[in-house]
Length: 236
Image 1 (cartoon, rainbow, N blue to C red):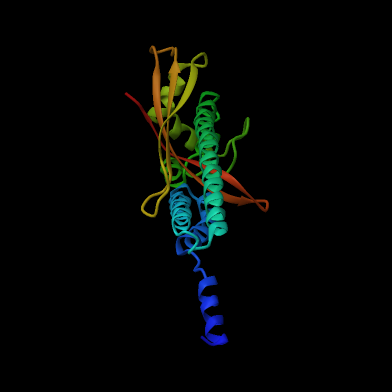
Image 2 (cartoon, rainbow, N blue to C red):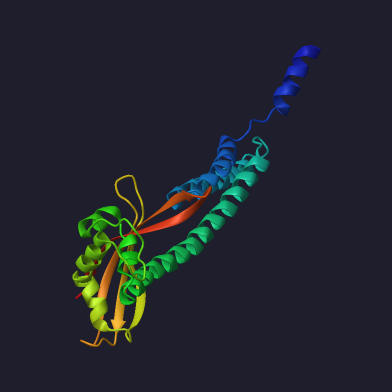
């Protein structure tokens, strides 16, 4: 055997292919960052973790024929860390959003009970607000323009407003999130909060279902949460 043939044989013996599963796991680990943007993408770190684990197993069983342990460990570590962070963020964020939804419903109730009906109307989404009347001014102690006065009169007789007023100022209010429909390509995000008022002056208790939507809007150069009430209906 010539020296060149011996060199080629040694090169072939020293060459060890990189595990494709390990590479895929590492790429998936980096792509797992997408899960921080949406809980719907938590499948990415799960798949990346599985690929990385399979890559490590394939390398261990190859008797030294495969390499790629480092990228496989990198992919496994990234996928686990990002998945934990995404789940934790989703839980904490969900609790925060639930509290916000309940506080918005209570704020609407307080505005109605304190006879700040224009403030309550301002919390409604535009279509519902337009069905009550046109509002061109904020509520003031006196000197309300004719359109604001008519809006107050029209809103006061609606069933949900009459229910709050009928309970009287002594009624305590409790808010509880009933359901949450996440945003998707087919529908908007919807939050449903149940308000329970008791004891009422005209009955033992009253309940209202508040349906609202949530979004992020830019105000003064920063993004803030924006809640709009879609409808309020007396609950049975």
